[in-house]
Image (cartoon, rainbow, N blue to C red; front, side, top):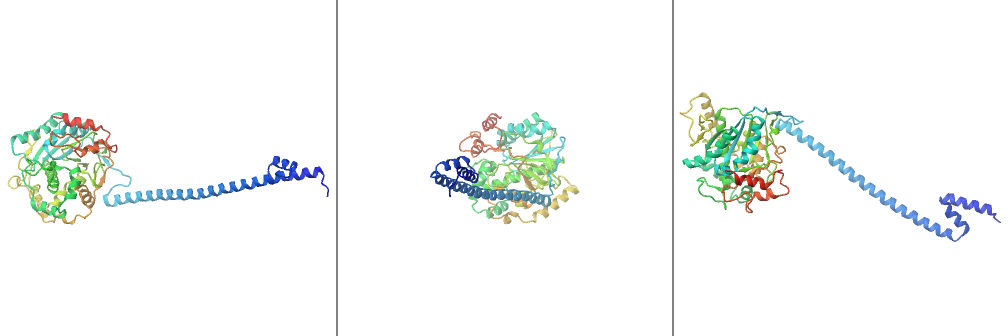
Length: 454
């Protein structure tokens, strides 16, 4: 059948509509061989588009899985946070919203220092600048109770120990009391009991020496220094014992303190203590500790909180050494100027203060001495002083908070003036120079403050 040019053009236009490309249809009408090539290109393009669609669809499905996983993770985190807050409310009596009562500026603050007076002679400038001064500027009256882990039997030893405290009194109107706890030897049954829990204590020694160089490895005599192989168990108990003696002196003074700070006198600081964090939760069972730590426990080189929470930290010694009665049965004698020195902390209260209150305390102390030491109940995973403190605080239902002191870093200073804080062999140098050091102060300035303090 003959086909008219008009019908041929119409069929070409129909092909153009079907393919969606009028130019290709017109060219195929003029040359029949090119139509086959155009169909091949079209099929190739369709295969390419189909492949891309498949890849896009697959990628989209995988993306949805990732998104679903992220959403599930976020939901899980929110649920976990809610569970943690509920746990805090039930176990630690902390309000779910984190509400707390701000400590009034006129509230009296106690600072308990337990350690080496020789080290404090190097760090008291840093201590006054970054701990005492912010408190005084806010309006808080400050009482310092210093319990020495070195014997103060001679006049020169006492004079050297009092030097830094008298300067604090002059510059910042601080009342102070100096307690000599080292004059009484450590109760050996207590030391042996804890040593039995850590036989050899070599691994524990490595953890503690870097973080908690109590008295720089000194013996009870304080004249012989054994930095190479310190008696970690004895040094640890000696410092906690001195801390308990400082608190006993505080209680005997009869002053009411709404906030208590516990610190090692060998600490040097570069940041001011956050006075805006002086906030007590209902019940007071919260203690603030530095965020920086070694073994995932609690760094108690510095701590602060309401009396209820800090009391549990101090009572760690009584829990480890319930047989030691020299702390509870002693009294510190304040001088007329506000400072005081107790040369023999083991002096018994009997014959000194005959009152019903003292007799009640003595009877209570006798009941406490009948309790066994917790040394035998320490879990095997508690292999450092930090973890021991953390375990004790958790057992006593005290909330450990490291948020307020996240950037507040205590740097342990050598007792020996011939050793600098930035000596390559000194452990704190690595922390001070580290890019992960949370302190906002320059480490070189901290070192300079220590070296120029007199």
